[in-house]
Length: 470
Image: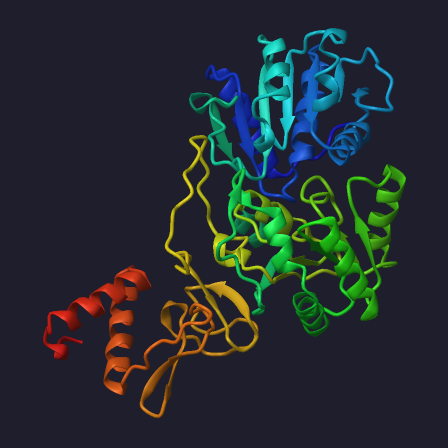
């Protein structure tokens, strides 16, 4: 028995086969979280095995191993598992823990194909050791986020393993075609800020982050907005550390929210029981640190509460992607971002162009806002596309460029809370306010951002250019 693939999954399979036919040996296929990557590579595994090929599926987490094994079992593909607690078998299909296989390379026959799940993790070390041990095997990488946290490329020309990138449909396309839920993003203001936090291995230093985010006031804000926007909804809460998670758990319970913690130190039965408790409604919050970022499918979960800031676009998309899967009674996915991740990385359904080349993190001045095409409502704190001039959630009118100005006794006052904390900005006169508003409108119509508008305004003022022009 085979899966009945969706049209876009069939297209993905055909593109992967065409890549091999054109001489590529290691394609990387990307499909958003919830799009069905496991189904796709299980289908490819079954097809390859039915032709007499040996297939090795590499996973880096226990949850992913169980998920892959479950999908292969659904289509009656006999397979072995190479991981602690499992006995070695002679099946032509093997699902392997990367860490375990690295110690048992001499105990398995050479595979004809190696499938690397969550391939953005594939780097040097054990991954390289395994791949180099089987130089004749074809590679296939699959991931929702083809981007390493350290910015290094996944392509062979960058020291990675893959020689071509195949891109599946976007998050927006999957939403528009009812394969994923529409995300509603809210970013309530908190006392949390990232100023001065150093970067380690491509992300914010966890110790410094924990010292700033692990505050009763911030957790209280998360509870308040959860109760206001989606009371009793099943939620995943992403924390910065186990200590932070324990404090969030305590405060949630004190406020009448049934909750449990999920961490990597728990036994498999306990972890599965807590995931099931969330899925069945026995608890409302599952509080986690780096456990359900990948490979955990709980479609009923409709809310993600972000209490861990990250510089990683991939980690952000993996986390919010956990709640985008559709469910029979689920209309939208609610994302409560209390750490500004949406302001760093944009909305989950924004169009993104992936590459095997890697990237260099952009340097920006202190308190400089990223140039993202988003706006935020000052009334309900919803974050949405900059193409809209009215908040889609509460109907509040929004000024162009995402900043809102209001006229107060002849002065222009910034009211959306995006100015730097602790800094007082000079109030503009009524004439200056009108002039800047016009410049913003002109810049926006020409496709320029707010920084360009500011430069034009200050240049005209400095050179005393005829103000009647605007």
